[in-house]
Every structure is written in C-alpha cells, then in structure tokens.
Length: 388
View 1 (tube, rainbow, N blue to C red):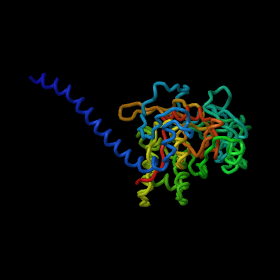
View 2: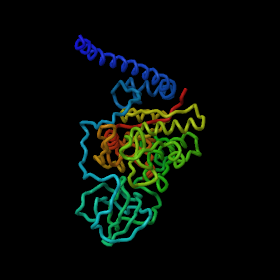
View 3: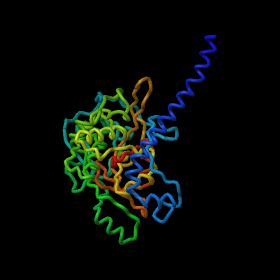
View 4: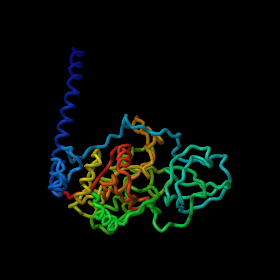
C-alpha cells in the first residue's frame, strides 16, 4: 500500500508544480501589462500601432512586434559559438619568467589598433584587442618594450609602441556630434533618430564599471543631474566575490578595480536603480528589464524617447568563455569581453546603431554586428520608465 501511495504522490507533484508555475506566470503578466501598458506603450502611441500593423513608419513588413519583459536565462545558449581561450585564474599571479621592468600606475591610450596578448611577445595567444584611442590602465613597463595592463579582470600585455600617455582630444575611434550628425543625415535623406544622451566615461574612477556608468547616463538624461556613478556603485550596487554568486545576482568583483573583477547583467542594475529611486523617494520612476527583446524592439523604446541600457562586448569583440565557478553545485562560466552601453539612436539607412559607450564616447556601430554581440551576452537590456 505504501508503494502505491508513493507512486501516486510522484505523479501528482509535477502536475501541482506546473499549475503553480502557470499561476505565477499569469500574475507576472498582469503586473507587466499594468506598468508597461500605462507608460511606455501609451507614450509610444501611434508609432507602436503603425509598426505592429506594418505601416510606413515600421521596421519592414513584419507584423506582430511586441513589447515584453523576459527573464534572462543564465544557462549558455547551445547555439552560442564561443571562441575558445586558455583558462585564466581569477587571482592573477605574475609569471616567473616575465622580463624585468618597472612598475607604473598610469592611464594610457592606444595610438592605433593593437592586439592584447596573454604574454609579452607575439608568441602568446591574443586575449583581445584595442582600437585607436582606447584607454587602459598600465601597471608595468617591461625591458623588452611590452607593457603590462589590467584587462578583463586579469593581467595582459600590449606592445609599448602602440600606447601613449598623452590623452587624445577625443577618446574613441568614431565620435558623433548629435546636432551635426542629425543635420547632415537630414540633408542626405537618411532615416536617422538620435536622443541627446550625454556620454559619461567610466574611467578612471570605475575601471571596470560600465554598467553603473550607463545607469548614471540614463538618470542624468531623465533630469537627475546630480546622479553620481561612484556613489551609486558604492551605496546601491550589490557585489560579491567570484564564486559567491552569478552576475545575474551581483556584480562580481569591484567596479573600481580591473583585477579579479568581472561585471554584472541587467537584473543587478535593475535592483541598483530601484534602490537609488527608493532612497530618494522617487516613486514616479522605476527600472525594468527588457531582456530577450529583439534589437528592433529596443529601437522602438529609443524612438519613443527612452534610452536603453544594453549588454554587448568591448569594441564588439567576439565573446569567448572565461573563468568558471561552481555556485550551488552548478558550474557557471563567465563570458569574456562583457560590456554595457546606452542605445541612444540609429541610422537605418546606413544600418548602424548609435550608442553612448562609457569606454569610447558617442559612437556608431554596425547594427548586425551589434545584434550578434547582444545575443551572445544573453540579450540583456533594461530601461527606466514611469511607474504609474
């Protein structure tokens, strides 16, 4: 008899859990309809209706465009083709055969595109790359002419001839003046839309803090001119050491340092922003996820006057697998080159997307390549909307 009862219990348990899941989903749907329907969709108005119906203002003839909030799944996408990289320990240890040199503590800029390597010669594998005027923290100058830098939470090396301590007039490879860009685009008949979001650089205060820097850009765009990236990071950003939590729960490491520091994804910034709003009793605003949205859907927010905090990679460098940690019995592997930018516009005629990049400035990226990197970084995004 006990075996019969146990069998019945095993059958009924998953059914009950499935029912609870549907109830939770229904409740979440009602909450989403409440705050998105009353704010963003109402603000977009006729634009949304036209896009959904496939009208002239839409992004092509496809219908069924939707505005939705999805929870990112931290399980790696089986279709994600990562570029394999050697395993790098979380706490860097200088190699014993490293050439002699001297320690420095300075910010340097790339004079032209350059490879970043795991060691101090071209015999070592490439860890990433720098584009012209990229800013990095140099911590050593070796006798063989190579420079030791902080890079992606570890040590890396760049040949010294590609670096300079002289700050360029404009940091970044492609910079835009919003007024001039929009004017010239209008003269050329290009389909362009750009929000006047003021760019803010993450360095030197937040060496590894693009996410909080992007949040600060959005807050200032909304009129909160006194929003400060450092105080937000210190007081409202939840952090954890590598292996203690996933980057969907906490910022892994410390955004102020480039060593043993990684980053975080949209849920962490959503919680950070809402804690900031609560602390200032700003009940009229709240931050929500729009992770999982297509790039076209994200551009609908921009067209309605809502800048989007979006996760991509540094300089659109291909994503690769990095360090791994065991958390609650499950292995989590970091995706290298994680970065965050604010989408502030687009040029459909040229097929480009315009972003405020906290490492480069206001720049223009290829839309297809940007979309590819966005998907590699779990399609993470978030926005600030009205709460009523």
